[in-house]
Image 1 (spheres, rainbow, N blue to C red):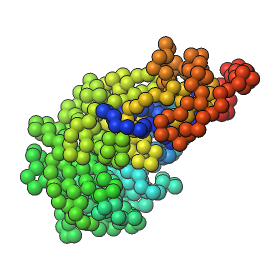
Image 2: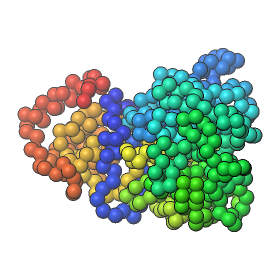
Image 3: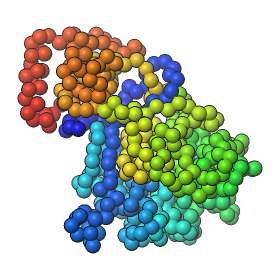
Image 4: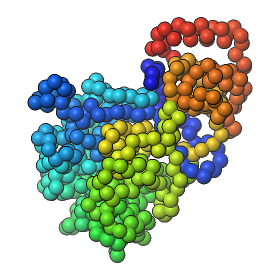
Length: 473
């Protein structure tokens, strides 16, 4: 597969994934994919396996992802229980590029947040807010570095729980509490832990405790009063508009409505796994998808076993905030679907950016990060290869720089005889549909048809760019 060097921005590609009208399913349209295996390989020299020589190594597998539309971070975990190397955190550089990317040393920033941990442990959660990166770390017992906050301008540590004189268990994720009705302009760092059922809160500036789990002042309760099964919380997510909280516990989803800055009501289980088999399963995650075409949704991974033969589409599920299942369709680059993602252990982490309406998904076993545009199905505007709602000269540029690549462009014709390949027929579809606009598009003014002279000129440019694939758009 040959990828264009002329990458478009995530926001541009994702801009029009939500089309006018209701859709039966929520669609996740792949914009980019990053093979991040480099950061999870300790040995760079296959001829000398006695020396671990990768300074970017952060663990055997990625268990946590943080994404805000422009920054991308990964948290490492020691899955093999045999590494004597420290795990850590790392930033993926230039994460707004598109296409399928196999990353190497230059694609990562310096490793930070290094911890020499007990075997089989590591970072379990990450969350971005403003210039802060919150991290949850679990070494199997309470520790002062269970919850940490880093400054993303330098990736330096600002504080951890030891600054508040407390310890905790960081096996249940981490987040930023938006406050009651989203009113907190400086969200505190929220966390919970196994057997607690409450939300603790640290001051984002100092790390000082605002609310605690086991003593006064107690944080609000999220656990239902009569919860089914045991209490192993693995992750949680907030509704940024209301402050309502959704918690992954024993492969269930619990919900609590916010009734005050430190109060909840209507605590309930909205997705119940009656087997309680997931109590000891690593990596059960959840993310809140705000304001999609299907409303506010939750995405999570439904898995209770550790086998590595679990299909992505069987594990990753979407429900509304009442726990009602939604049909989710994952469309991958190259005309593939979620069914084509390699099987894994059912462990995925998610982070959604509501501004660009993009979702990052990290695959624990296969060490890939997917960036999806989140929207719904709708009519295809044939020839609109940059997905801006109008077929114009800018779409020719996308076609020109992608010609010969095995990828499904936005606006590919359903009548294409070579779907998933950018070739001459895609140019013909663009030419035939030049000037068309999507219904309701802000770009609805008709554009003039390209003249024969203009076409000749662009074809001449194509010949030149065919010899030099890094032509600027």
